[in-house]
Amino acid sequence: MKPRVLALCGGVGGAKLALGLTHVVPAEALAILVNTGDDFEHLGLHISPDVDTVTYTLGGISNAAQGWGIEGESWAFMDQLRRLGGEDWFQLGDRDLALHVERTRRLRAGESLTAVTADVSARLGVAARILPMSDDPIRTEVDTDEGLLPFQRYFVGRRAEPAMRAIHYRGAETAIPNETAMAALSDPALEAVILCPSNPWLSIAPLLAMPDLRAALAATTAPVVAVAPIVAGQAIKGPTAKLMREMGLAVSADTVAHYYHGLIDGYMLDTADAELGETIEAQGIAVNIGPTVMTDLPSRITLAERAIRFAGTLPNSRDAPCPGH
Ligand code: FO1
Image (tube, rainbow, N blue to C red; front, top):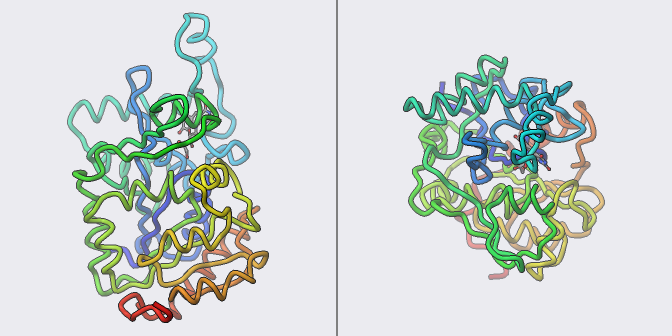
């Protein structure tokens, strides 16, 4: 069945709303397009952190407090690796390691990341479709005052401390976007596209860096709704606010709305930012104001319900000339 709702997301923040959506949209009607720009080869293994975070979260086995990896993990592999002088800057739990080993074997045997992800997520009890954004390699690299860093070296290795100068999405220009997502975006029956509250520049931008996907998003007849990842000038988690400061951008929810301008019909603002509503509406983007901070499963489900309901009230107004321009 073609998806009726398509969610675009990265890791932790996105996975929370994706989980909420699985309680609101029937599994066979929901597809989640996930960032693979964080993927990398490590210890000879192909690791897909955002795909795995979404898979574990929807499979109900994620370490919610940590935001990544599996709950109740054991660390015998890492302990022994350290004793052997192996690279221990990136923590791989024993159960998580099994996925990286098996996925790497299957990729080397010629299977696509999409096919492996579909099988793995089904085996872990996930009914919704988890779609890697492309089977072609896209690698986020962060140009910093310490030089050019592959994403995980920046994010985990250096704890996102170096000052960011620029972000590159290597390979995005030529990567072929996931075909299920592309078909959904051109399907008149698609009811909503939800941009989850992941880091726009690190987790959503790699998706938008694929020209065909960006064009399909801009052209879709479905209403596109983004959920603000910034509340009252703060990022919920991760380096979003720091990156915005390093880009000389105001750390505010309306900065993100502007970044998505031309791609979104609606924007969900937290009540703390209600006063920003008017400036965002002046950009031709409808605004929905209410709690957007997800602290537990009920709040994720409520936000997902509101996002779908809000999308249902929106015409696809992107074609209309923006008032005031
Ligand atoms: N994040 C960390 O801060 N430290 C880690 O050691 C770490 C290991 C790890 C292993 C598997 C995985 O799927 C994710 C992991 N992450 C770790 C999180 C990961 O770097 C981020 O979730 C994404 O790349 C950014 O969204």
